[in-house]
Amino acid sequence: MPRRAYRTTATGDGETIATFLNLRCFAGQIPQTLRPYVVAEAFLNTSFPIHVLALWPDLESAHQHPSYFVVFKVISMKTILVTGGAGFIGSCFVRRAIAQGDVRIINLDKLTYAGNPDSIPEDSDAHQLIKGDIGDRALVRSLLNTHTPSAIVNFAAESHVDRSIDGPLTFVETNVLGTCRMLEEVREYYSQLQGLARETFRFLHVSTDEVYGSLGATGLFTEETAYSPNSPYSASKAASDHFVRAYLHTYGLPVLITNCSNNYGPYQFPEKLIPLIIMNVLEGKPLPVYGDGLNVRDWLFVEDHCSAIETVLSNGRVGECYNVGGNNEQTNISIVKMICSTVDRLCPGLPHAPSESLIKYVKDRPGHDRRYAIDATKIENELGWKPQQDFQSGLELTVRWYLENRVWVDRVQSGKYRGERLGLG
Ligand SMILES: NC(=O)c1ccc[n+]([C@@H]2O[C@H](COP(=O)([O-])OP(=O)(O)OC[C@H]3O[C@@H](n4cnc5c(N)ncnc54)[C@H](O)[C@@H]3O)[C@@H](O)[C@H]2O)c1
Image (cartoon, rainbow, N blue to C red; front, side):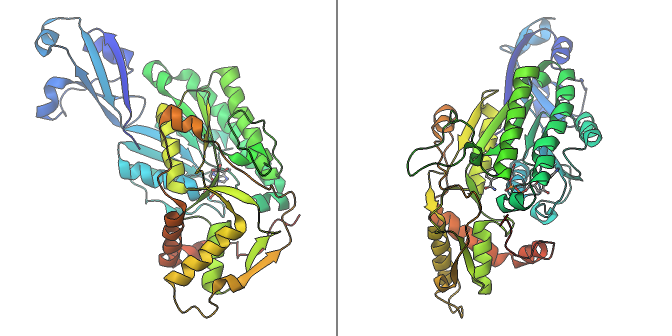
């Protein structure tokens, strides 16, 4: 995650400026070498120290005059409340944030079948996992008041389309009501923030391209495409997006929304297409392909999705939606064939090789959207984000990860899900 440098200006002595920034001043505890430049070791609405570097145009005059112009660079050890940070994408965001430093993560996750503590680092000063529901208002309130985050990134959701066909109400409960209950608490919290803490606070809602519905053979989803969700999953995500937007327009909550295409990569629960096919190939099981296998999705490596979220969080314009995609359209059948050839190459001698012989066309998913494709021009042009991973090497990296992490797979599979077919309606 890029270091976030807040720049602001103020006139006054150390005390006035500290008040403006909502800081508590400390004497001592500051390295000798930095002392001339440090006016305060401070708390910026977090329980973590922040070094405030006050760069005077002229240090001598700064000491002599009671009032002077200063430019601040605040290097913050900020706190982010991440929800759903034990899931596939959220855990990637958490691992990256901790590796990059300068941030503390409070990770609120219900630990449903899809949430896995094995995917995230152990609790430390930089990361704390709280088992709980985003819809538990008392819990969310207490986390906000205790940890005073400078941002919230909302990954928490029920995320599997087939499950939403079997049981839509769980999706309404978490994706719609859970998000709304949390928004109510965040609105109250935000109303009490002041100064820089209020100016810089952000609520980033992670959403999907599935809210836009299905495309024909041509065309791309832009941020202006009308929402037209077709599955209970995408309808619940669309509803939550609308509420997030409404909290901006009605209450002035500084929100951002990202709508991303299909993700793949390490740590994905093996009910989703790519890990399911990898595991079935390794185990010599049939490879189910829905319908004619020609449904098209745009695929993005999970690290690229997380870098897009970091970019939008740091530099996105409040109230904007950003489409995120890999410019990488693939039919389901071509993905399955690529996985077969990758596994056959990496694991020579499999008894069922060539693994394509395991492909089995099965009854299509009800209401299966034909094609999704993302136009990511806005985030590329406005914020300079671009995906880094090409599909061929990203897929190989993913297959290798599943080969090398059988313990992780065994542990998630020993839960409720055992690879059975869901979502036939
Ligand atoms: N996977 C994709 O391809 C994709 C693409 C675009 C957008 N998204 C969105 O990104 C987000 C994360 O997706 P994912 O693939 O990591 O999902 P996931 O199913 O792997 O993880 C979801 C996480 O949320 C947690 N959770 C569920 N209900 C909760 C609740 N009520 N309170 C707190 N935590 C709860 C789960 O325990 C799990 O850890 C979702 O909002 C999803 O809609 C996913």
